Length: 394
Image (cartoon, rainbow, N blue to C red):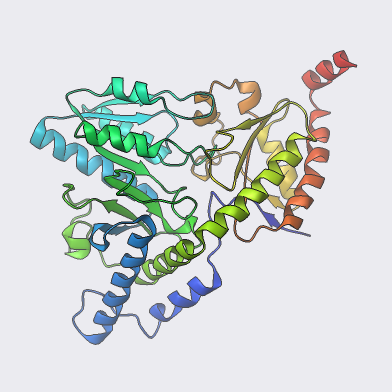
């Protein structure tokens, strides 16, 4: 059976050249970067080389990159370490974020609230964009951080990051962004955008899972998140995951080299997929900003259909998709992102996220466009409400 993967926002396959770069560091080049002998020195040199490549991808300085276990750890570190430090030193305890953040941010904020911190959750418009005036009006004397994601992981909307960074800078507030979905998919220059901290993850850009990074602007105070050894400039203890870090570095290098071509290809496939579905299926909503969005994201809501039934039906014909964030897979609750857009349960229950990537072909899109209307029609025939509405229209 033909197998088509359209869930690139959940994770990406490791590219062959990236794996080849990693393999020697599992075996003959296995040294610990903290060791002073040649095995260790060689490993440390490759880690530093990877750090330079990751820094270059976002326009940062090499000394501003700290390797972590992934985007979730980076988000937790940025918020928690800064929060407790700011409260202890400056008596500031207010964070501004949005209602459509990844759960790595939202759940961290919930924990901080239980410990006495104040969090403002900004509303978004029908496209998933925050209102900059709402942001300005939410700033207080005790506000120390604005944390707004760069690209939403479910609907693909790109936030007005540059404007947010400008507002934060003018008010002397730190600006953190969860850029896990943005890195390698849009152009990023942390200096131009006035970003103070940025979270990223390797497995979203064809690198290995279990490794990511936190960008921390030089001069920004951040306390250690994991205590122990002197790794990561004494801020993140633990022996480095050398092969994965090297893979992350190679993935960043490839992403930067191919960024424009990557964006153009994904945008073309995204539009073909979106138009093909919207033009052949009724009672469907296209979620997210129509233009300011992730180049490979198509998020749709189908009325009169359960999302799980749709995903299973697609899987039967060999198409891998999702209903939203991979981190909430298995949850019966409707998407908090779609609910924040103002969509009712009749739509949120039938959500579908299709994301294309570097290995997606036009033939893949043609196959999906052939199967989708048939699947949607079959599922809707089982819906009494659909039968009632369609019957009334005839």
